[in-house]
Length: 316
Image (tube, rainbow, N blue to C red; front, side):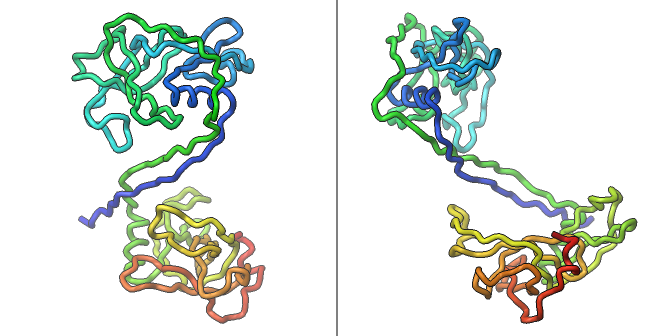
């Protein structure tokens, strides 16, 4: 049986967004240990607050403080917390309707075990020691058997309000390439590039998918392409990648679609060995490999005359 290729992959990036007046007040309130909701025109109080009524689409601006105590409406036990989750020990994800609110807020509930959690139990906010104006300013909820706390009647007006946030998104997963791309990856280890030809339209696709995207039929005939190719389109990258070791490249640089000789689909790669402002459509290029690499580090000009537009216009 052939070896099944498998590799752990991570997609991670920071997402920066500005805040409108409602979300700004809500997050600034958390920094100040105040929980704010927004009142709808028919008298409901929504927590977390939104800028538009989800039922009527009316714009909402009437902020109202609710209590830091509330009631669990539903929950699910998390026995194995993952990286970046609110608590490092097992906890419950719970929807909590805070006193004075008509909707529930999702957050972690610190409990000794699933037997200690129930729908209808009373809880209160446990505030983080250091607060910056984020949902994590609520460290978690905790069981509470005291009297319900009264909100202070805050209007939602703060000095030095939070105007933006950076949310760090991360997805960890395992990737298995399948038969067609496994063959493509194996060929790259020998510094060759192979695609697969469609038995119907006869086009050669690189990297291969195992089926023709145009005809929808399976592909199996392997075809070696390249190694040289033609730049079809490109972009100049002016923003340096961060937290990504394999993209630690000085800007500006060029990323391009390259139609390898014999292929009917352009792949993308970095262009090097030429000033970024001299890269052009039709430029003939070849791969540059580094010692021990599993794929070309970049492509560089071959010195050949530029390809005629008609030879690659269908691959734009």
